[in-house]
Length: 569
Ligand SMILES: [Fe+2]
Image (cartoon, rainbow, N blue to C red; front, side, top):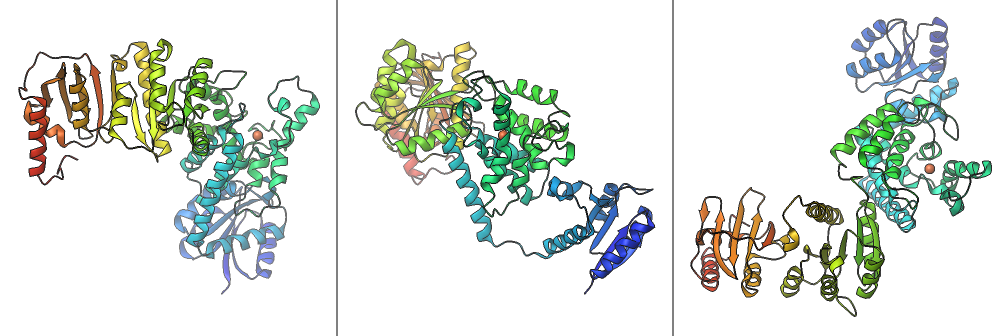
């Protein structure tokens, strides 16, 4: 069956020409001389395609396209002006500047392509999986290539995340989002081969140096030319240094002539670079970097993209670019795990140093004090606990937050670690994004403590009941003859407190419930963050039983309830 097409143009000559061309190509052609006439036809006729001239007397082509899409969502609408496709809506976003329609053959090809696209069956699931797998592989490989680069380290993953978020927020098609994601990972691959001192800007730039640097955009596309990617990434890579005002390179494209992927990349890449530390300058804060983007809206950057990105960075990435990049010292003897962990944390926006043993870690600390240490426990030579002990003996590291990340699920070791003031004891394998969020919290808390904003967690420890249960905490504080308050906060809003005085439990309360009953309830809790504030006391006395009796009675009640605590996991 013939495909139907409606041609809308003010110009009878254009209508005649297109009628002949499309008729010869096997289309059933109808014509309209105005937008209003076209709307009538679309309302009453099922059409496969509409070809609309951009400048009509009563509508703009883009406006009419919107109207037609509403009336007939399945109709494919292409806006054409003097044989030049106007970059609007999905066509705008879909094609790069090399896709201007310059002759009749190209109009037919575009319609043909649109037609094939519509009838194409969705790719099999295996394809999607393979594509995802490929993207993840690029992510890791590009990350590994850059992870030790002091100038560009860690930006590829962050840039990719930002680019994906903007593309999603702009409601681009999944195909385009994938293209932008892949291009954001590979866009600077053309830097390969450019001498380090030129890239680092260590020397005075000659004209030749500037030409060399600028060549990276086109070189990147050339390097990837031989690969038959399932994504159209070449235009994005070539044009990622174009400017909105047309003063960029390599082609001096302007405004919407620049592929949308390249416009997005220009913004997010600039933000990622501005908020990263460089050997020769400090990182800008999030606010400063956003201000820079706004200053350059309309000249360097696409206003629409900046608007979307500003919203996203405030809602979704509010933790990025807040102050300088947090610095973490990672200590682990498993070098492959250490590298992976470094890559993941760098990708999450941290500055990361590594050491594969305690001695090396202590030497690192002496050279440069990090914001936090993340350490394995079992290591040859001095183990993690021994290292923490040595750190606590030195006043300069006495308060340095330490989190353990270990494969060893041993309560005695956990207790030792927490006794020494470790912030947390996490078990491998760990979700890296969750780990990054926990690290940020620990560092934020430590910063507040240093500023005196919260009473000193240095006098206590924090953790989660998942890793250290109430019985172990009671045992530790009781045997250590501690005076402290243990506060456990639960997701449902309940907060429980147990007060110890010289190792004796004196008071326990959850909301209005206090005494033994409150203690037995807390004993059922198996998860929830806790804080042990040493030295915190109360004059309230609600518990007379000794700790052993209290624990035994609590356990007996749990046994009676069927051992499996119900209702308060
Ligand atoms: Fe670049």
